[in-house]
Length: 423
Ligand code: IMP
Image 1: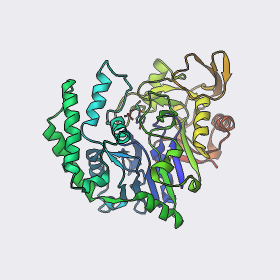
Image 2: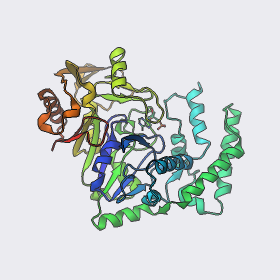
Image 3: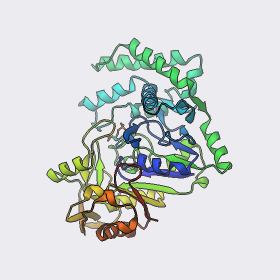
Image 4: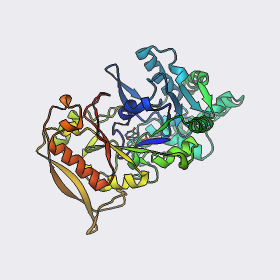
């Protein structure tokens, strides 16, 4: 099994890369998060954002597994499937989706908890996507949630009603505005009917059998390393494990079966939501790069914060994940800059450090910069590595040396074909 993860704060371009290499795989298995993700893919020249569905959904030969560690909001999944059906009118689309029996369901009150907590002075503001992801994972850990397989149990309706009516009363007491309880409950039950019609299975068994039969599986991560609940920039993180090891836990596949680990990074950094960001660019240059790079949340449309490439944080992410191949995206967005700043070290409490976890408790982090020569080329006309400008080749070599990891692909634009194989 190969694994693909993001190395920064998400939105590195994972969906596009998976779409490109999908042909090599028989199964693509999403292993974490839920509708908080937004993996953008160009299909027939149209931009499609996948939230819960794995990024192999457009290929007839691929089985798309929604793994046990994913949290599923039935209405979001239904909307996503309906949108794809209208785009590709493929009667077999649903047959290519396999959902883990053990994946947890996002109940309709959970998103309202996110909304309440983000607005209330009594709670930390995290800048979540308000999809109720944290409440689903916390209910799971409290052992108070329902899973996909529970939809077939005779107690399902009562269990769901009990959980959401209790939460509804609490939220009402706190003054949170919501539709009526009947509406929330009724819509949820209706949307579960579609979910029930999908192929629901012991996905860990399917995956292990497939691997035994030499089928190729790609585990697809959502969000990214620096948003990992333990190793990310807590508390400004998501609530799942986003690192490569989580693929094994979520999918029920032994670490002994892992082969390549692809790590995707932009040529600069972005993040949405709050939290530490020492290489952040403030002002008109950030505004300019945001527009050039279309750096607005694919899910929430929020403007992304922009920063320069952070080598110490990337070293940390590569260490955590054991990355074997790097994918570098969006070098084209830096086109036309005379010099490109890259943070190579941090000075932390007067000590120089070449690896940084960006723990939010680190008070004083002073980035140490190296300025690399920029490039200015018509990327649309470049189709192989020999046509790359010397400055960009030098930039790529510098990153490979610093990170001691080869860059396998360079993405030069949003479309599937705008990708150069370097190794
Ligand atoms: P949550 O995952 O919605 O709870 O949000 C927690 C943090 O993770 C917030 O800072 C979000 O902006 C961030 N986040 C969640 N999903 C993504 C994603 O797919 N891309 C980028 N940031 C994300």
